[in-house]
Structure formats: structure tokens, C-alpha cells
Picture 1: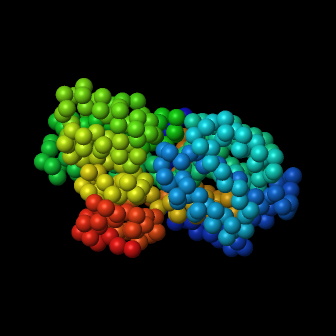
Picture 2: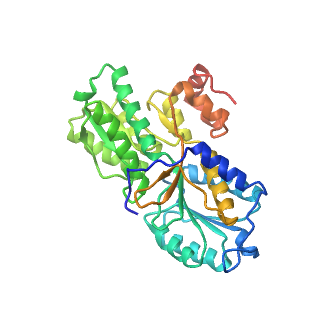
Length: 359
């Protein structure tokens, strides 16, 4: 799919949630026969493909357990597998799942591999939900409001510069974006740029985007060298990239505003330690629940509405993200998306006490 930064509003998220929940009262799909109605056993299988375990810890630590429990509670037999950053493995997993039979496929794209799988699935009459990342040909897209994620990141950079007494319009800001093969990366970028440009920020350097902490560290170090060691802030597209950037800042004795997203343990620790200005918290359970409700409704033969559309017309159910600074870290722990014991280990213990983070 050509990544899109334009959306057409439809109904409010609260409306779609109510509609989907109303359609799920029986707690499970009714199944479909070859005509799309009926009840063969395969139609209650939910086939899920996760992209990797490296670009973000969320896929295995958060999404898998939320989807597993939620789908099973909704009456599905689940088959959740991880492509481990391999497009060929992605295709193989999909073929195996389709051979066994799927009532619905829930796919997180990896480097465009989801499009071919969506085409195969739809050829067999199986509805496809693009989860978190857009996929060409999917029936629905369930994700967070990705432009808003970017806007929140951009605002954290602007606010960080202002707090440091720097004029954003003259600040030296490096952009460390995400992999352009991920359709969300452009949305994050566009949202961030919208806010940063409005404040007068222009990128002093912008290496090619990746979802990789080590490569982001290398790219940022090269950019910093090219700038003579001068940097006032870094827009980093997620916590993994931010962590890579922070290793180089630490190496050079620098502390500047750095953005991020995912509220990963490392990201939250960097926020508490003052090395990262904020992270965008995406309540993953809300995204998983929206996808589960949608899957159930589709198997019941319903046609749910969505609150937005992608430019190609794909219905887009968007969940609201939340900006988390040090004072808000405790809310992520309270929601169950971070473990206080793990988070507050070692040098972070004092910061946890300062900001009221506890189990």
C-alpha cells in the first residue's frame, strides 16, 4: 500500500466500539460455509501473523498475549505465529495457516509481505484485518491514530527545546525515522513534521529510516559527526531508535530532547532518567480488543463502520495514543503494560521513587 497521511473522518471511535461490542454479545464467531454463511469449524480459527521480535518488544510481550486471550475468550481457536523479520517465512506461515483453514486473518505487515497473503485469503473468501500497519487489499485497518502519534512526538521535541531555552526555529534537530517499508512510518513522520515545521524546525540531518536500534545509533553518530558534534534535539520515531540515539549521546556526554513511542521498558526507563523527553504510549490492549471485536463482527456477517478511511478507501479504526513523560510513567504500569519491578531495576530505582512508580 502506498502509505497515506490523509484520512476521511466518518464516525467516532466510541461509536464503532459500541457497534462492534453489540455485535459480539454471543462471544464468538458464528462461522461461515463456502457461501460466506453457516458454521464450519475452520471458520472459528483466527490466524494471526506478527512481524518480528526486534523492531519493538511489543509484538511478543504485549500483542501476542492480549490477542491470544482475547480471541480465545471470544470463542476463537487461535494460530498466532511470528515471521521473525523474514518475508519468506511470513509467506510460509500464511500458506500453512490457509491450508489448515482460517475464519479470519489478522496480519501485521512486514516489508510488504502482507499484501500477497491478503490477496490469497480474500480469494478464499476469508476477511483480512490489517493490524497496526496498513496492508494493500485488507478489508479493515485497525491501528492507533498514527498521524497523532507523530504529532505527539513532534510536540515533545518542541516542548523539550523550549524547556531547554532553545529557539526551535534555530535549533539543530536530527530526524531518525522508521523503515519506509512500514506504511505507518510515513504517517509518524508526517505528523511529527507537521508540528515541528509549524514551530520553525527544519531537519539538520535525516538519515534513511530504519526500525533498528543499532543501525539508528550508527546513522545518528554519522549525522552528529557531520554536524561537528552539535545537536539540540532528535526526533526518533520509536523507543528502539531512540535507545540507539541515546547510546551515542551518552558516549559524547550530551543530553538533548529525544522523542519516541511504544512505552517500552527501555523507553520508559530513558524517560524516567531524563534521557528521553517522552514516549507515546499506545494502549495495546485497546488496539487488540478493537481487532477482536471487529473479527467477531465480520464472522457474524456484519459490515461494521469505521471512524476514518485510508486514501484507498480502506476502513480505518483508529485508537487514541497518549504522550507519557516522567510524571505519567506510573499510568502505564497501572494499566499493566509495564512491570514496575523490571522497570525500576538498578539506576532507575531512584527515579521511580521520585515519580511515584511502584508495583
